[in-house]
Figure 1 (cartoon, rainbow, N blue to C red):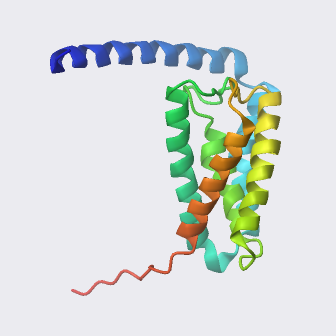
Figure 2 (cartoon, rainbow, N blue to C red; figure 1 turned 180 degrees about the vertical axis):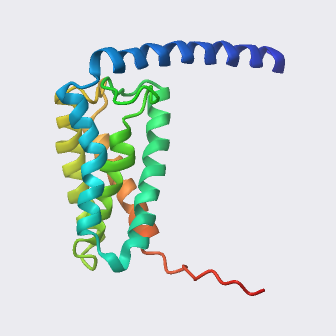
Length: 188
């Protein structure tokens, strides 16, 4: 296969993705919108951020947000890789613009829960906190979402989720505890 043939193949793939996105968008608009699951998913977008805003350590907001943004980025990367290989899926959709991702998890649940855990007893052992967080998220959260058809593990073991959550937590912990922040100055 040469370069031009590869371009043709990717265009065919994009056309198939557009068709798949149209099917999923129709499912959101015609089948999911305004069901209790849809409202629950919408709440999962909004309520965690309200809780975090009210409970956050105001003096550590920037550091916590660094951990939250790291969580968003890493969870999106892991999910995009896993979804592209069909390791799991998210049957329930909330927005017609998100054909494969479970956006309440990526943009709200994961970062907010990690930020809240980071600020609870910040001097306690991070390994213990990470293990507890990962166990609750993997064995509680992921199994709950599978039960209500928001997540289809397709044979993916929950123990793998546990280790994924542990890596996400430690990366967020590392970002939120970096001491290399320096104020930007205008030296002109």
